[in-house]
Length: 598
Image (cartoon, rainbow, N blue to C red):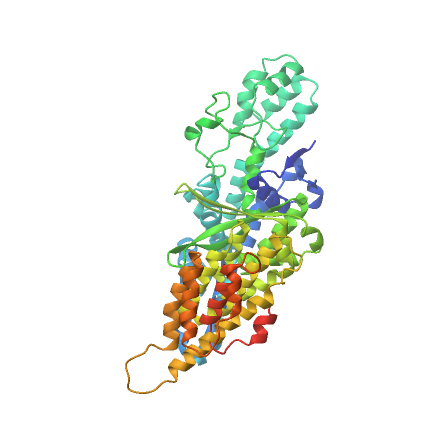
């Protein structure tokens, strides 16, 4: 007999995605909104879970990738060989210290220690070949089954699992010294066996014709405490009807899976994000039962424990450009499609993030590389990012809803976002539009960045253009590029003014009073212009523009008059495109490149 599990809550969806990756096709059945599972499907699950974690989050492969990056930098920058060699040695030494703690007497540890010393002597270009060999030898000895499994398991528990589940089961510090096999045994005992027993009991309860059958089953497995508690009551009942009536009327149902009984409660140690401790879950008490404020089955708990395998893990910078920190996040994609398609979407998304794609790049690729792209353009999507810190009792949860107009924009023009070459601002731009917020504030930040770094002028221009395309899509306009040429024209009026001001001031000679360079003057005025745009003060903006043009041979472009009209480009787009051109690099960007890219 099987049980149907619906992918409804995001945590259960993530858990089901993780679970399905560990099971064979004949062990699970997909439906539109979930999966059907039976008890026998759980056989061997604990071992599969542990080894999937080891394979996916291999510490050795992660460190080798990092060391190869430093090695490539050594080849490109021979004058910094010693600096990059120091980073390679630091990466090796960080792990070798952990190997010493557990395997000091092994031959592998001795070899790894020797390799670290060899890298210590790398200082010149002639040492590059030996460095490459040292990295390969490190891979060979650190990849031994004993070492790689130990390093990876301890990393996974501390960085991936602990934030979600606290110190339950294998996550207790005392388990760090135990073998992989002991981890498998503990997961089997704490998660898999209870779920298996509850699925089997559910079968007996639904198909049983005699009270004795159910009582015998509970008696056989009374070492499982919930069964022992039930047995004390049902063994006094004489008929199957009374037994079934008891479980229907007195045993609480699982809050996550229909058809299963609860044997525990959903709390912090089960799944930390957004959970409460039992003592503080007053508003959730069912029939004043403080032991089970949110009733939960072991099957649901097992699926929640699988959730890290269903999500993509990556580092994300949060805060402003001036004050920020980098946190570990897990991401998930949800949609109106079938659960099977949601599963495939998340596999693709996770693969892209694991290869270093940014949030924006991964989202665009997921939409553009799908086989049924035309169908997906008609769907809306939902992105979730969660950061959890069990020790600090802290959860940061961001939801991003992507309506159909945004899906259409990304599917058709999403690759244009790559020209926003400031990585953090590109991601901020995308997250902002996902929240349904006008990304103009991100553009203002991009313009401020361009003041100190003219290289970002072109990126700011593309941000202005992409914002306008999104506004067009939101209005239902089919040709989202209808305003592109006008925006480019405005951008080049800014470029034209910059060249006039910079050339006229920088070419002056003589012993007269000091005059700031054209670039310095532009930078000072830029803050005034940006503030005027942010405040929506068209008059102040135009007063400054007129003063700028008075010192040149140029005429004030008539396009600025459009900013006072109700139709056409909005004031923010006109002003931002002009400022981007005014602040950009001098002659490094070709006109055709700006007009045609994206």
